[in-house]
Image (cartoon, rainbow, N blue to C red):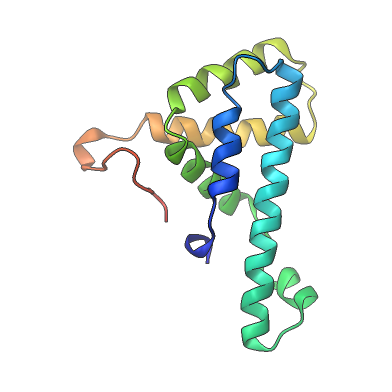
Length: 137
């Protein structure tokens, strides 16, 4: 189901995250905005699939919530397609160094993004996975 979603808007926002004109707090707010876009796109896809199966939107969302594993896969996809995981990594490290450790949801999403970037960075080139190809979709 995740592969059927057009992540273009979220990818564009992920590219904006590395902007040098944004302050760390603005980058954290943008990250929350990216997550809101992801949640909305996911919910729309779940509702559309539910209608095809004759379920109500409420039932569908309860049966298929966006879980942490999905979010990690989506963040990995966005990082790959934003074509700048090196810049993204440095941006994330910069924000983590400057901001408090007590970031609540912002900190959680930052950790998920760091995990996605680490996964991409540590891929074994010998596995033959080409760059800018959706790894998990």
